[in-house]
Length: 211
Image (cartoon, rainbow, N blue to C red):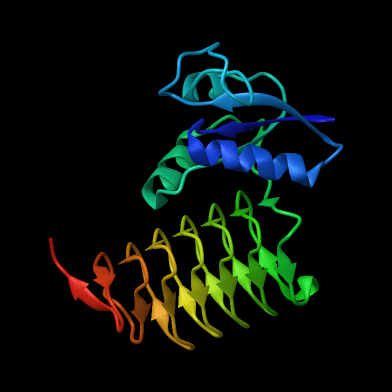
């Protein structure tokens, strides 16, 4: 049996704990949460706070850690700040997720797939992606690292997505388009063409906005 913990003890951390409980992996022993914003030793709803990044980097035994954060930049920052070689990052995949043909999928480390996520054939996910409830990925879609997909996102077939993009609730993109890096897609927006890196898009069809 291997110890497992969740990094980030907020609302999404609680959801991830419930997903892990549904997975019912007999090889895991859940020991609590790491969070730099919570007092070490504080008893939370589903476990104790074990400390923050310093405590995790000093952890003396092998441990699995899931980063439960829906901010792409924070996903990257936290993962890069964890330098303890004893830490592994498993994929957390809700038992209700659908795979059209699992053997054709490539999934990296540290991903979270919440309830009802659908993965078609020949889909590739990189590392540390968060896919919230009922997200769907069409055939031959390719996703990079540190992306956050809010509930109900629809990614059509043969779409290519880079790194650190944020997809709002019920947003989507039509088939065979490419999304680069650091793009924000607003809630309900639908991309019909390639967006510019580092920009925000809203509406149907989605258009760029500046703040």
